[in-house]
Image 1 (cartoon, rainbow, N blue to C red):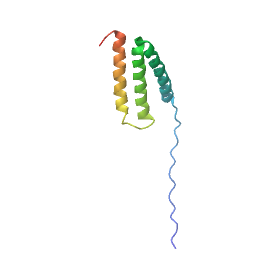
Image 2: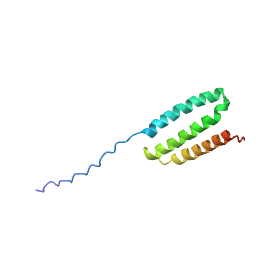
Image 3: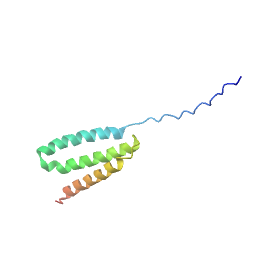
Image 4: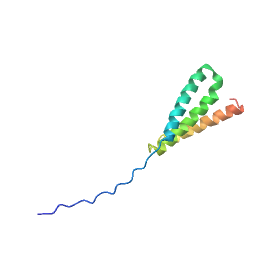
Length: 98
């Protein structure tokens, strides 16, 4: 008879305790963006603030996609659109008009 082959035990990797401050920030920024979006519908002068909050939210989403979800497909798109929106809002604050 053949002896049972014992498979060596797999080394257990220590579980890293994750904290989710960036995810909480994303929730806060999303709520802020929705509120500013509604306010922008009533008062068009708030558009630069809405663009700024949308841009920062998209940058946070890009960072969360890369760090937590390990998805790189949309990360670049989110980051580029976020930077464009932040740039447009900064130009609106400075006074540049299109």
